[in-house]
Amino acid sequence: MDPARVDVNVHPTKIEVRFRDSREVHQAVRYALEDALATPRAGLAAGAASGPASADPAAPRASSEFLKKSWAFAQQGWAQPAISLMANRGSYASDLEALWGPKAASARGPGGLATSPRPAEEAENPDTHDWPLGRAIAQLQGIYVLAENAQGLVIVDMHAAHERIVYERLKSQLDTSRIASQPLLIPATFAATPQEVATAEASAQALGTLGLEITPFSPRTLAVRTVPTSLALGDAVELARSVLAELAQHDASTVIQRAQNELLSTMACHGAVRANRQLTQGEMNGLLRQMEATERSDQCNHGRPTWRQVSIKELDALFMRGR
Image (cartoon, rainbow, N blue to C red; front, side, top):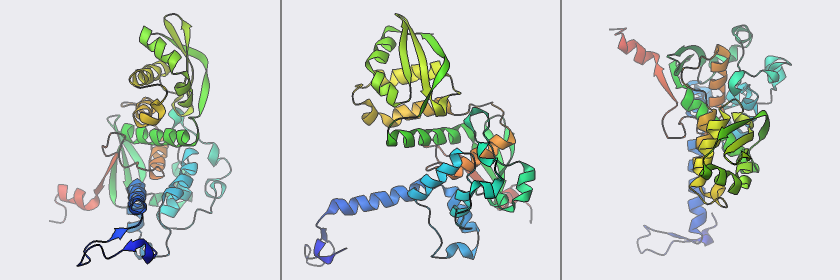
């Protein structure tokens, strides 16, 4: 900083200084903290575990700009170039075709979960075993995904993790202009209360920004005609009811600015995978890869952790190995 912009003589013993533009200093600290907290811990842990090479000061650092680029890969279901960079194993100049073949970008599992390479493909690509959150090995009670990585066992709350991924995707789309949407082949109709009908009519513009089109079908019935692309496989009626309930509590003209987080969190909850849904191994691996490339994926929208690491040392201690 230019010394002329700092007054060092405001205190006789120099224990305080005064900045000409204190807001600039505040913003610099704030954005640095936001970038640090947004970076997924899984990637940083993998970088630390990669040995002395990770301490190279010239090694690439995770940043918001990097994570945005990483998400472009994760949306297609193939986040390996991003993961390689985050783990300091190289640049992400490698493209999808070089990693997985010409058909890689077209893979997509049901429920909006991207799929991951099959075991045979993993054998051909040794780097897959170095993924920060590891390789999925099982699903427990329809709630948790169990994965194996270099440190030991990773336990993932699949609903909480997917909810954060969907939320960040919706937020990113809304920041650009509006949430991407798609029309329903057959509109979903439901019996609505007078308040829901009034809210749908008064909030048409706000609903459109959120990727929803909800119009009167009859005096007491509403029809959901368009839903966000990310939530296309969810329950359109439950989604519409929840969003209308949120909108009814706020002024429609300013709701997107004032209640954005609450609205998107409600929508993401309806789009996330539910408990007791059986996932294929490809879907579980796809969820892990998207977590590694998504900002703030270590916590769900309500602040709960989405995954935990149990090291081999901790597992050994449970069974008193080595004693």
